[in-house]
Structure formats: structure tokens, C-alpha cells
Length: 183
View (spheres, one colour):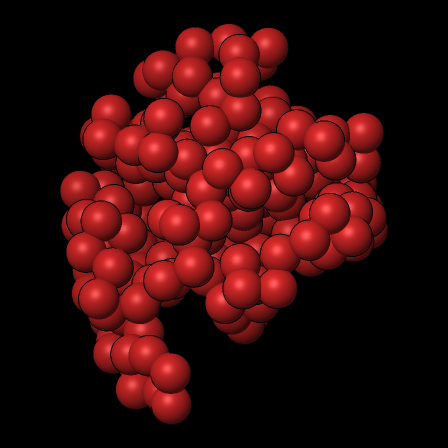
């Protein structure tokens, strides 16, 4: 039996919907309007283009089909509400692990939407067979991104120095979420 992530996830006021190739204009406009917020933290934002977004959406479909990654638009309230950000869960941190990434437009900031999105992704990750842990990686200088795993009960597991930035790795294990009272 094949297992895949749900195409729509909900947690509190957040609705996550699977990114689709026909959302090129919507995602391009969202990134265009978010570049000032993204450039300090997301290396891909420096080479942003409509073509790069089209490539991302094409890879998102292929990754979804293979189970390598699940990419979602962040919306507030309903599946047809405007897109406020993007988030993903990626199987790139080893056996049983899922890494979560996220960003949000200024119009969605400061209302807990990213925390709700990360909670939805964490629950979804643990609903997939073989998932043992979830990680969130962020630039050590990005305190807003670091506040998300802290609020959700992740443990700060590691600091990885690098040439461009220091990365903080947060982790939560299956037993902390599945069957427990958790956000």
C-alpha cells in the first residue's frame, strides 16, 4: 500500500494546500512581495525569477509523486483564502526523518500562522509510515524562525557552523507528538 501526505492539512486557523503547477502566477507574486523578508535567510531568494518558480513547482510535483517532499501553500481560514506563505516537509535528513521549512509574507506575520503550519506538518510527518523524528533547521540569526520549534516543544539539538551562516537544528521525536497532548 502506497502512503502519501494529505493534499490539504488543517491546524487551528491554518489551512495548507498542495502547491500545483497552475499556481505559477500566485507563487511568483507572493515571492516578489516577500523578497525583502526572504533574502537574509533564503539563499534561493537572491536568484528568484519566474522561471525558477516554474522549475520549483515542477519539482514539487515530482517530489510529491516520489515521496521526497510535500510542499504546501499557507492560507488562513479556508482552502480558497489568499496564499500567505509556503512550507514543506522534506525527506532529506536520513532514515525516518522529515525536515520542515517555512516562510511567510509580511501580511501573514505575527499571528502564529507559521507555528500552526509547522504543527500541521509535524503531525502529517508522523502520520507517514516509518517517521521517527522531525527537524527544523534555520539560520541562528533568524530568531523568528527559531521561535517556532521552541513553541512546539522541539529540542535544540545542534549548531552547525558554516561558511555563510550558522545553522540551528531543532528536533522532536514521534513519542513527543503521537498520542500525546501536543499543540
